[in-house]
Image (cartoon, rainbow, N blue to C red; front, side, top):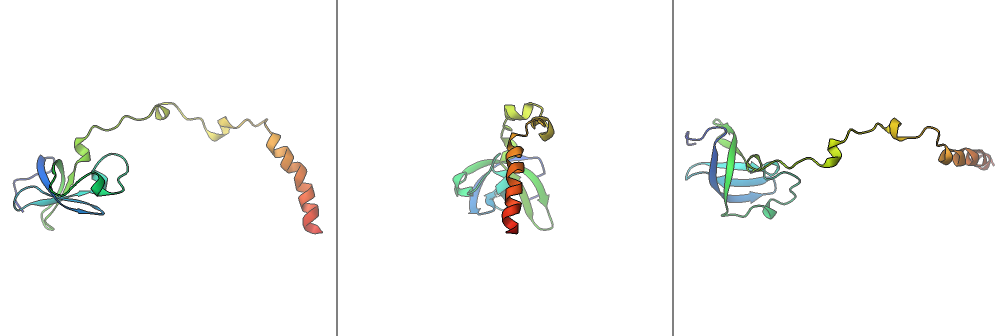
Amino acid sequence: MTKTFKVGDVVTGKVTGIQPYGAFVSLDEQTQGLVHISEITYGYVKEVGEFLTVGQEVEVKILEIDEEASKISLSIRELQEKPTSSKRDDKPRKSLQARVDEHDEEGFNTLKEKLAGWIKQSIQ
């Protein structure tokens, strides 16, 4: 493995292979790394081939280098702008207890009324 790469480097590479779990990217003649499916983009990625193709040049960030195993972990997602959170997340959430009106027993009364009849039917 070439020692010129270090964690945090941003380099341009070429996609050399696509697997269900990610894409292999060649960084130079002798060095190849893996962009795991979770590091392709923000959000859900079902098929790697929907985002990358063999031969495509991509800019990647080096996340981890394992010299002993000769493996390099790469990310495309790290170079993308993180999506803003939705408005829903900005509002404080009410607890379930706060959302339930304790005095609203309309639905429960009909069950209460039917329960006696159901018990009577099950005994017969």
